[in-house]
Image (cartoon, rainbow, N blue to C red; front, side, top):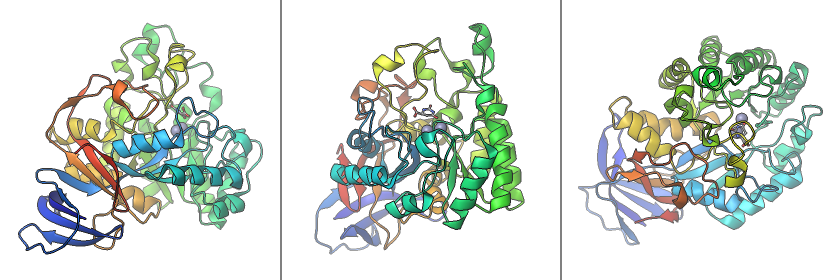
Length: 424
Ligand code: DOR
Ligand code: ZN
Ligand code: ZN
């Protein structure tokens, strides 16, 4: 296959016109568009479109097994492909929880049957994510888990977290943490701030996240484990991670598009499509997250794709489950808000969604180079389109971004040289 006349990001972040030749699922040649082309194969004309390494999303919920009414591995993987993602890492808060080798294997089998994007399973830190008993880390690693996390809930006991980190360090595996102190958030649906005040709600305080970040940084220092912080949303967490990196502690972190784009002041009313955990925080927190992403304190962008059914979300702000979908809006949202406005370089956005997650989690993908797997995404930077949740490939339609006019839509996605989504 030859992708002709694509715009690709060059060394200095400038766009260059190239022909990309793919052979046996691998990028075999990158030719200057001016060079003579004597290769045979399927030709894809990409004139005027951006070709980037396939996007990587290291934090997603695919809901299978157990919650197939919200999403399945197949529908989630298709939604990911449509959003331009070629590798995704799925969270273990399924039913049963992914806390045994058997469920890790089941996730891998379902992903292979779906035959769409690369699906990397996380396994739980504690059995049933109850925080009471560690899982069998060695067996889970052996089965193919790529890290340990109780995402959905925080590990409440510091001793339990320390034991987990010691074990993970010994196996050269990362610990990935949903940071939340339960004693500070009981009964809360939104963050402290103007929205909570206006509606007479008790708000989630910033410390509920940052207390765990601070605790776990100290435990990471003590155990030497690679500690990765989930969905950073507060100024205080960014500050703690920045300081920890400065003194050489092995900590990395992620941030979601919604925490870079929305504050609690933007919540229009008691609509559960604006309910996620961590919640939308203050404008000041949003600014701190953006600054953290720009200076590398926050290493990567993830969606925390969290599909729920319309019925579940209709229960209202207080009772509905936390979470919003993310695959099919992530890149266009960030491109439109930050790149098209001239605030960020395109190369920064692409790096935080490709090369950086590959570096942090040591994945063999995420670069557009000869010899790399042909995990590729083609993007139309010009056509403006409205977000229409009814057209999502995901079963979930729970997004606060419906109706937003965006540019930067993925139009074709390849995994190991095979087209898994195409609109052209
Ligand atoms: O918003 C969220 N949704 N946050 C979480 O921590 C869990 C996730 C889910 O599983 O729905
Ligand atoms: Zn979480
Ligand atoms: Zn999550």
